[in-house]
Image 1 (spheres, rainbow, N blue to C red):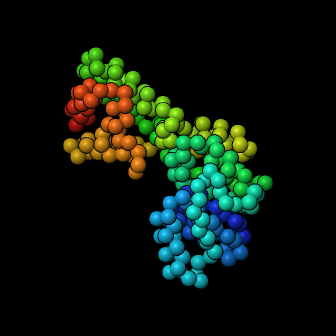
Image 2: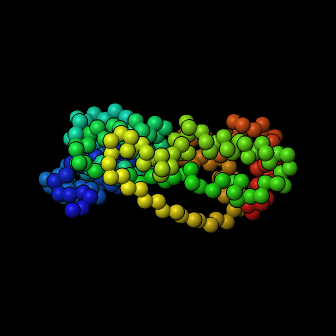
Image 3: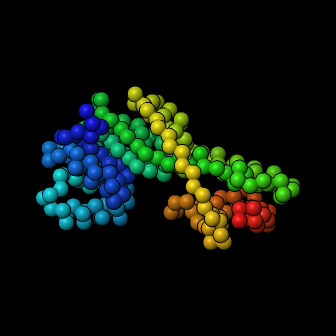
Length: 232
């Protein structure tokens, strides 16, 4: 049997513009039901427009604006929960998956796809910092502090801790599949400026701002200049 079946009740949590929700609706058929849930209204408005334009040709999709930590759904009413790049934005991941477990019926299924930023290469792995002399130790310490901040939603988990969280709240038969992607980039001035000063996601501090929490600006600026030279 497929993961999503005809007649299923599906919850797309953190649905955004409905990539998963509309795909699920094609599989559940007219007897199924898809709930697209997001805390932000922008994506839900896009979903509403698509639903309006599709008219009767689209299988049932209903929109919910809600925080994932407290869903306005009864216990055990959902057959399948799907999520894409959602948990990576949540600080309290175990609380979130506990809420998803609550709304799933016994034997229900959950699938998520999450980027594991914690596995990304660190600058200290890309650049030989010995040329910084005594400043290298301070940069290494600041980088380590940044990467191990439990309050940073992008960095406070990996595939192993996610599996632990799922099992801790009651999920069984948990399977983790990890795909490693390697990209090469030409680091010109524009790319370097984005590396330091463009947040990875909206609302988050930039790499420069994060490191500035542990280093004084003069120290950091010397390190930035040196690292830029090594990356070009």
